[in-house]
Image (cartoon, rainbow, N blue to C red; front, side):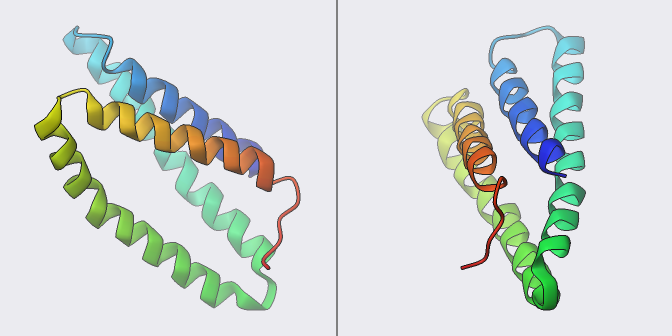
Length: 116
């Protein structure tokens, strides 16, 4: 799961950024499909990883994972809409930066998973 998580974060970040560099219709469809695929692989890998390391706290960890996912689903479009008002490319750049930060954190922290 660790490799899937880190590679999914990295590929999603790269291809989200690439979307601002292309303008061909079919290329946008292909790149967007890769981004969706990366994110769709990421979610079950994270859930599986969290359930393995949660021990007796599986219910709590699953609930927190669900809560943070829901928070992202709510706040993502709001922040994206605000950023679209500033410039059409900024939401993609912002998303890529967030995913790169998540990638860096995951590569550093997934080596020794702990809940302190």
